[in-house]
Amino acid sequence: MIRCTILTVLFALTTPFALLAKQETRDIQFRFKNADSVVFNHDVHLKKYNNCKICHDAIFDLKNPRHYTMDEMEKNRSCGACHAGVKAFSVAEDKNCVRCHKGIPRDIAYNVKGATDAVFSHTFHIGVYRCNDCHTKLFQFKAGAKRYTIGEKPCCGACHNGKVAFSSDSCQKCHPGYKQA
Ligand code: HEC
Ligand code: HEC
Ligand code: HEC
Ligand code: HEC
Ligand code: HEC
Ligand code: HEC
Image 1 (cartoon, rainbow, N blue to C red):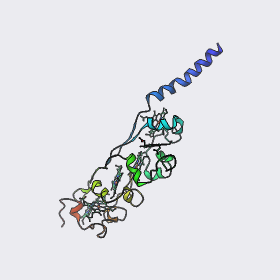
Image 2 (tube, rainbow, N blue to C red):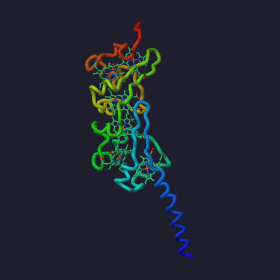
Image 3 (cartoon, rainbow, N blue to C red):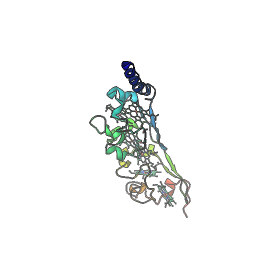
Image 4 (cartoon, protein in one colour):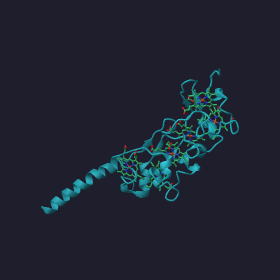
């Protein structure tokens, strides 16, 4: 009788967990407006750890999911808890960006009031620069960042100053079709 009760309790404790482990370790997509998703693969990581608790909920709280910036990851939050260069490749190193961010980030059209759309081409700039030249230390090109007017230091104007690249006077180069008064 007692044995039976213990077995029942054990069964009740282990079954939902076992089901969760079987069913719900699918690939996780982190989506971006202007770039392909970063895919987190549970299987690859479970081969290393075989332990849900390493991540849930110490690093990824499933009851309070939230988004992190790369700045936060560089301070060991989210993926950066392990991807800091010791346990796993670092989020801060330029050569590693594309190991998580597959594909070339999209070209962007900024819808602006008072001029034609401003265009920014990742493809063009990646031909000349590394990801780290713009993300995220030197410039504020990151999610939720304040938007800057042209010429302000942290924006395009940091390079488009007439020295590194054409200056902010060349409106039409960034706002195609714009007619200067
Ligand atoms: C190396 C870290 C890591 C390990 C180990 C890990 N997970 Fe996850 N898990 C994640 C991440 C990252 C997410 C996405 C979290 C987010 O979106 O905030 C996630 C999300 C989930 C989700 C939510 C899925 C969804 O569709 O949103 C479930 C359920 C889950 N994990 C179950 C498990 C189980 C069960 C195990 C153990 C067998 C496990 N995880 C081990 C990192 C991990
Ligand atoms: C608990 C530690 C841990 C966490 C948290 C973690 N990783 Fe990893 N990850 C590893 C380890 C260890 C490896 C294998 C070693 C290596 O490649 O440097 C790895 C490998 C990878 C790989 C290469 C896998 C492959 O297919 O070759 C990718 C991509 C990756 N992780 C993405 C992520 C992303 C995205 C996150 C956050 C959502 C994350 N990881 C969170 C430990 C972790
Ligand atoms: C010349 C500067 C520059 C370079 C170099 C650059 N980026 Fe960007 N990136 C930007 C700008 C500007 C944005 C748009 C920011 C905004 O307005 O939301 C952006 C957006 C992104 C986004 C999308 C964020 C979102 O929420 O949609 C990702 C991801 C990204 N870049 C990754 C990369 C990677 C990876 C590299 C290197 C392969 C790279 N970038 C190189 C300037 C740059
Ligand atoms: C271990 C995987 C991994 C590596 C390496 C990595 N990222 Fe990310 N990155 C992510 C994930 C996952 C997110 C989304 C996080 C979220 O939404 O919680 C993200 C978000 C971003 C964003 C949007 C949020 C923000 O901070 O503006 C940009 C831009 C970005 N990454 C650029 C880069 C650049 C540039 C590098 C290389 C210096 C890099 N990432 C390296 C996984 C990675
Ligand atoms: C890290 C430096 C840097 C930053 C930041 C930067 N650019 Fe550039 N950009 C360049 C250089 C260098 C060239 C090529 C030289 C030239 O044309 O004067 C260039 C060329 C261009 C061109 C012409 C080539 C093309 O894509 O057709 C446009 C348009 C442009 N940039 C727009 C932008 C916009 C919009 C931003 C801000 C979102 C920006 N750039 C941020 C350095 C930069
Ligand atoms: C190097 C590229 C570049 C050049 C050159 C440029 N712009 Fe812009 N402009 C942008 C970008 C990118 C935005 C959107 C910024 C944002 O929303 O964060 C913008 C925003 C604007 C806006 C709306 C926001 C604001 O500042 O009030 C106006 C108006 C504008 N530009 C007019 C001009 C005019 C006029 C010129 C020429 C004198 C010019 N721009 C030159 C890239 C450029």
